[in-house]
Image 1: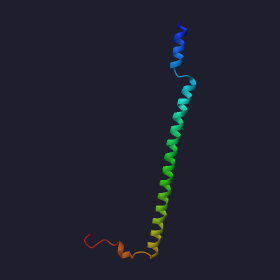
Image 2: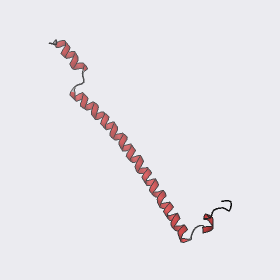
Image 3: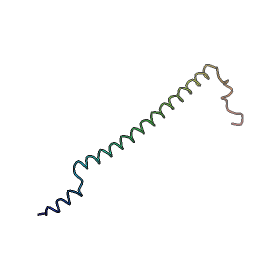
Length: 80
Protein backbone atom coordinates (compact mmCIF):
# COMPACT_ATOMS: atom_id res chain seq x y z
CA UNK A 1 0.00 0.00 0.00
CA UNK A 2 0.96 3.63 0.48
CA UNK A 3 3.52 4.70 2.99
CA UNK A 4 2.42 6.94 5.90
CA UNK A 5 4.55 9.73 4.43
CA UNK A 6 2.59 9.58 1.17
CA UNK A 7 -0.73 9.69 2.97
CA UNK A 8 0.40 12.70 5.02
CA UNK A 9 1.56 14.50 1.88
CA UNK A 10 -1.69 13.68 0.04
CA UNK A 11 -3.76 14.87 2.98
CA UNK A 12 -1.92 18.19 3.05
CA UNK A 13 -2.26 18.87 -0.70
CA UNK A 14 -5.76 17.56 -1.43
CA UNK A 15 -8.51 19.90 -0.38
CA UNK A 16 -10.44 18.49 2.49
CA UNK A 17 -14.20 18.25 2.47
CA UNK A 18 -14.41 21.34 4.67
CA UNK A 19 -12.12 23.24 2.29
CA UNK A 20 -14.34 22.28 -0.63
CA UNK A 21 -17.43 23.46 1.24
CA UNK A 22 -15.74 26.77 2.11
CA UNK A 23 -14.71 27.27 -1.52
CA UNK A 24 -18.26 26.58 -2.71
CA UNK A 25 -19.64 28.94 -0.06
CA UNK A 26 -17.29 31.70 -1.18
CA UNK A 27 -18.44 31.28 -4.80
CA UNK A 28 -22.08 31.27 -3.73
CA UNK A 29 -21.61 34.42 -1.65
CA UNK A 30 -20.01 36.17 -4.63
CA UNK A 31 -22.83 35.01 -6.91
CA UNK A 32 -25.40 36.25 -4.38
CA UNK A 33 -23.77 39.69 -4.27
CA UNK A 34 -23.72 39.87 -8.08
CA UNK A 35 -27.36 38.82 -8.30
CA UNK A 36 -28.33 41.36 -5.65
CA UNK A 37 -26.56 44.10 -7.60
CA UNK A 38 -28.44 43.06 -10.74
CA UNK A 39 -31.79 43.09 -8.95
CA UNK A 40 -31.10 46.53 -7.49
CA UNK A 41 -30.07 47.89 -10.89
CA UNK A 42 -33.20 46.42 -12.49
CA UNK A 43 -35.41 47.87 -9.74
CA UNK A 44 -33.98 51.35 -10.36
CA UNK A 45 -34.59 50.93 -14.07
CA UNK A 46 -38.17 49.75 -13.48
CA UNK A 47 -38.84 52.78 -11.27
CA UNK A 48 -37.38 55.11 -13.91
CA UNK A 49 -39.46 53.51 -16.68
CA UNK A 50 -42.61 53.62 -14.56
CA UNK A 51 -42.07 57.34 -13.91
CA UNK A 52 -41.51 57.94 -17.64
CA UNK A 53 -44.65 55.94 -18.43
CA UNK A 54 -46.70 58.07 -16.01
CA UNK A 55 -45.27 61.23 -17.55
CA UNK A 56 -46.20 60.11 -21.06
CA UNK A 57 -49.66 59.07 -19.89
CA UNK A 58 -50.29 62.53 -18.42
CA UNK A 59 -49.04 64.17 -21.62
CA UNK A 60 -51.35 62.00 -23.72
CA UNK A 61 -54.33 62.75 -21.47
CA UNK A 62 -53.57 66.46 -21.71
CA UNK A 63 -53.42 66.28 -25.51
CA UNK A 64 -56.65 64.31 -25.69
CA UNK A 65 -58.36 66.84 -23.42
CA UNK A 66 -57.23 69.70 -25.66
CA UNK A 67 -55.07 71.32 -23.00
CA UNK A 68 -51.86 70.91 -24.97
CA UNK A 69 -50.90 71.62 -28.54
CA UNK A 70 -53.62 71.87 -31.15
CA UNK A 71 -54.45 69.04 -33.51
CA UNK A 72 -52.77 71.04 -36.29
CA UNK A 73 -49.44 70.22 -34.70
CA UNK A 74 -49.95 66.56 -35.63
CA UNK A 75 -50.77 67.03 -39.30
CA UNK A 76 -48.29 65.89 -41.91
CA UNK A 77 -46.40 68.66 -43.65
CA UNK A 78 -47.65 69.50 -47.17
CA UNK A 79 -44.66 67.89 -48.90
CA UNK A 80 -45.77 64.37 -47.82
